[in-house]
Amino acid sequence: MKIFNSKKDLKDCILEHKRNKKTIGFVPTMGALHRGHLSLIEKAKEKNDIVVISVFVNPTQFDNIEDLNKYPKTLENDIKLLESVATDVLFCPSVEEIYAENIVSKNFNFDGLEHQMEGKFRKGHFDGVGTIVKTLFEIVEPNKAYFGQKDFQQLQVIKKMVKKHHLPVKIKGCPIFREEDGLAMSSRNARLSKEHREIVPFIYKTLKKVNKKFGKENITDINNWVENQFKNQPLLELEYFTIAEEKSLETVKKAASNKKYRAFIAVFAGKIRLIDNIRLKN
Image (tube, rainbow, N blue to C red; front, side, top):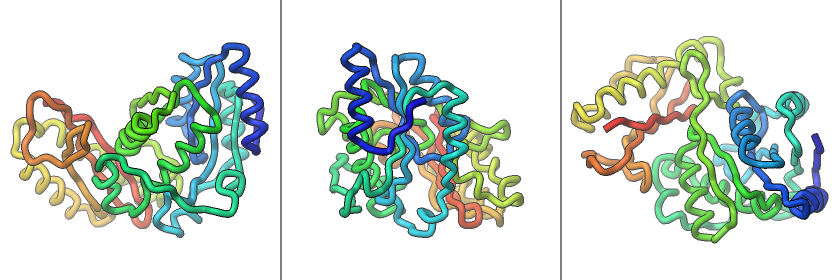
């Protein structure tokens, strides 16, 4: 595996592969890698000649400085994991290499996708996501890029950005990778206390019950039911739960038979914020 810290060196490497007619698959990450990330890499390896991974904790997408400072940084272990799945190229730049002296987000218009759910609770988050993902796409110039559906809103935002900015990359959404007890894999899971780790599978259990209720019960009643479930869980604090249309991400009160819907949730387990979602069968 080749490891690069500079944009120029990485671009030179990729240019050489492209001269040899190699296709480039890209998996951008913030490190603290787990099996969910490795599943994205496996998908990328299936459809591309060369797979590039980036490890970069992007400061502009954090609205909470404490969350940024405590985000797990495990580069040595990440490298071992990447080598175990025969990754071709790792890009792990410094903040200065990406942003120089100007660590600020660009402003994006995602046609309203940025104002739903996460956008309501994390000011400027998607401007930060758009800034770093567009920058990385311009450096790596991949044919395909792979993202997990745990961050489904982020996935839709990135698809919108690619379309509006006419970027020559295909975005591939990959299924949520879960622990055996259903907890969606996340780098933040490592920060959970033992007590919280035991209770957090309740989040996915609740989503599965919502899926059974959807189409049979009134959406307002489902929303109230979810709120009551979390009121009975003193270790978990529900930040939001919503049922939204997949394409627009707009919250719905009544479902239509010709559209696809997902249930989205954000929960605090102590100070650790966890998100999850599930496609609903209608």
